[in-house]
Length: 384
Image 1: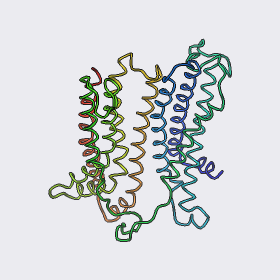
Image 2: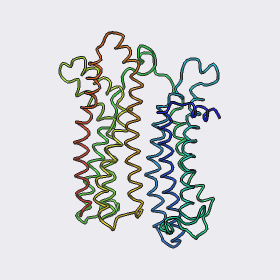
Image 3: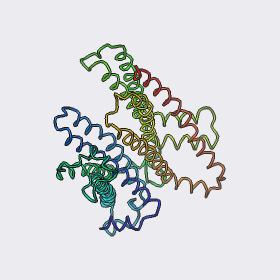
Image 4: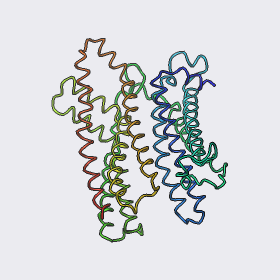
């Protein structure tokens, strides 16, 4: 009930974010139900029904990641002085955030079920002259326990992820805190950059090797399956390298004798390398997969989800973009105290705007060309 009251009393922007999570959960739930319908229509389809269900893991992961990003930026679940006295400590606030996330995802799942039943004709007759009959297995009994089990995947996964991510952690040593004692003053460089580069190189090499018709070493397969595996591995490498690349961007801004703007921008990127770099790396990986997916989608033989392939891909892309924008909002919230301090010290507003422009500019200058290069290299063997 407390989570519901906090949701009702939230700022319209916060409500809009939660509605976005509910919409993503609704689309994901609909895709899961369509996978169940495909299995009902083709009970002897062999590996095709499980493959469709496994393909839904991408939309599920994207929705859960978006739900976590939205929960992190929710001002109603941030620890504040005085809340512990009334029993709302960090652990309780994490549970409230998980409950609010579950509420949004359950709402989306119920919407997905209502839409699916409507398209089946179970509510008001078959719509669109039965055009969605095969998609929703109209005329066949729907196993309700199986449908509810599939619809519970997103709420359970999202709420569990939020509860684990927002759980209270041990405070860092006093020497590593900011002057206000709130958080570490400056991270150790993230160690994902060398691993990310190695994974990208491994994926591209596997693609090129398998595209020539040779089998991968160790019995890892050959032909088109190996090419697709290399494509996925190269995309994952971009996501792994995201925090390290962000930290490197912060160092690049401080090369030479930086002025106040470059110094502030570089320090901010280095401090928040993991917070900003993870969604940036994920967005880069999604962009790489999207470019390769357009090459494959043009080939009629590769549409793993039929006409719903585009819907699932669009959901993953929109979740990645929304997660990136939400992470930017969270980063701004974390810098609010520093920004206020600079303003109190007389820092001009132009300095703060220049600092923000430098951060965005260097990130775009590094991530866009790199993503385009990896995506083009990864897409070349896919067309063969």
